[in-house]
Amino acid sequence: MSWGSPQTIEQIQKQSAGIADGKYMPAMVEKVRIINVNVDDWSVDCVSEYANKRFFDVQVMSPYFHFAGGEGIYAMPEVGALAWLCKPSSGRFAPEFIMGYMAPFDEDHVSFRSGRQSLNPGDIMLRTRDENFIVLRRGGVIQIGATPTAQRIYIPIQNFIRDFAENYQLFTFGGELTWITERDDQTTDGSAPTKFSLKAKSKANEPLHVAELTIGSHGEGDPTTLELTVWSDGSDSRAEKVQLKITKDGDVTWDVKQNYSMDIAGDYLAIVMGDAAVNAAGKSTYSSQGAALLKSSADQATVDGLLRAILKSATAATIEAPITTIGPNGSLKTPVNRGTVLLAALTAIFTAIDQAAKGPLAPLKVVLPLWTAATPTIPNPTVLM
Image (cartoon, rainbow, N blue to C red):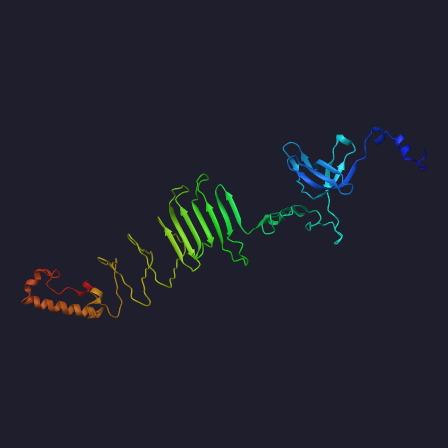
């Protein structure tokens, strides 16, 4: 037989010891539609598009599968999907299987897209009709999401992880972190209240948290914007130890059950536009290594002691004022002069006392502590300054 001579089918079959002589049938591939899914045994029932032939309990092919432990990449098909069914050449010893799926041709748009998302060459996507998805993009980017609003994106450049969500919750053995948007079905303008919450435990097996920070809305009518609470522990019998509240009006409230201290390496300045008060149930001490100044620029400065008030200095104490009054509420109406005027007044007083003591008041010498037999003269008035 020459290469160029024509041959009939019968001649080819006689010369071949292959399919015809081995009684193998040619493999058959048909376009079918899934009409039933058997979720328990991972098989489908389908019908051919043209000959209306029915196939039952057809195995669904997977890109990769190992029978040990269900390892592999696989998907459960849905009713209505178009597929390619293959009937192997080995006949009944190799039953039919779904070898792949196809998209119908859209004559209106001349396309096989069928609702698939736009991808770049090399991108790989897993997606359902409910719009949840996993996308492996060329360049290393990974997108995982339930909706476009609820998704996480992994970006290899600078190792970024970006989360997008309306509500967010993170739960660990050590605590939890949440962002909550209290939106209902009637909210259409995006003005729903929101709140951030961070809760921490001191021990993983404790039922409650030891600290909680909340920022945002704290309920209708509550002006609180930030609240920090610290408890003694995370037990059911925990006691509140510290609470900080900051309102949107600018009010700040500290509630401390024990001690409160500040250690400032630099300067400290407090500017109070309203009134300032420090109320201590015990002692109050204000000390300074340098000069100390208690000053009122517009009104009186008062040192008020319930029993007594002490002005003390190791060297000298000075009172500087044009007029100085003494007595309850300054009841001594005649102003008490100071400086040289006071010195002259005291000298005149002691002179008069001395002269009187030489006459009928001589017996007073035994009771006046400023005079003794050894010092019968007038004492130096400056001693009294």
